[in-house]
Length: 262
Image (cartoon, rainbow, N blue to C red; front, side, top):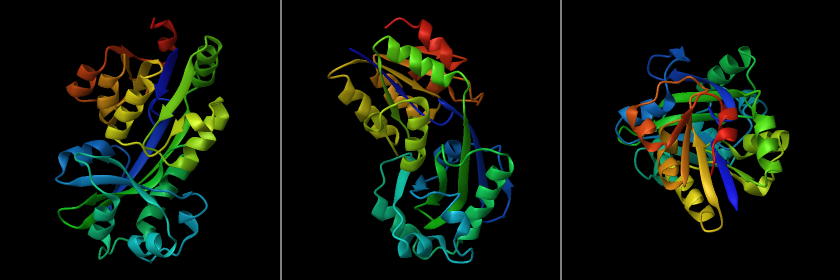
């Protein structure tokens, strides 16, 4: 039996990501959130498990992010970090932070202004310095499904290949994407950090020959663990050498995986 595990952002969807620097107030779309985490000390990227277009955008703007999360019992999950960090540690680090919901709303609006769908990507989150005990950046992402994806999924399924998604993105967004491209919900693993992706691939290898398809540093462990690790460059981002070194095959378009024999 064969299985293909896809990352989501940058792999199945063209991602548009906006960050706000809390200290300067600058909003930009040209900095990689994963690079920010990698280049900092004890940083973590965490996703708010709620719909940004319905919940966050309509929340009171001047409450702190911590109070908003705490009062509304919003789950917050760590999507990427350079070392394993517990959710309780992250929440403790931001309990006195003064970053406001408006700082997230600013990034959501910037994504929506570009006509990207915030409901099929990771949504909104924060980059936290556990060392400084502060939120350094807010972040929102939107996406558009790469046009080749539905046909690629259909062709693989017709060949008898089981399709899975393992992504750091929000549960609700991945559910919408799975429905759109025809993947069962039980085959979707949400808010999977680099370590969890690796464990997912390792678990599937007990029953399948596994191909992992990803696009960035948070896929490295899973690419190495898979029987075949495929790096896709369709998002057209600059990746460090360690990402290329983790992959067995590099493709420029998702439809090229149909030609890979495994």
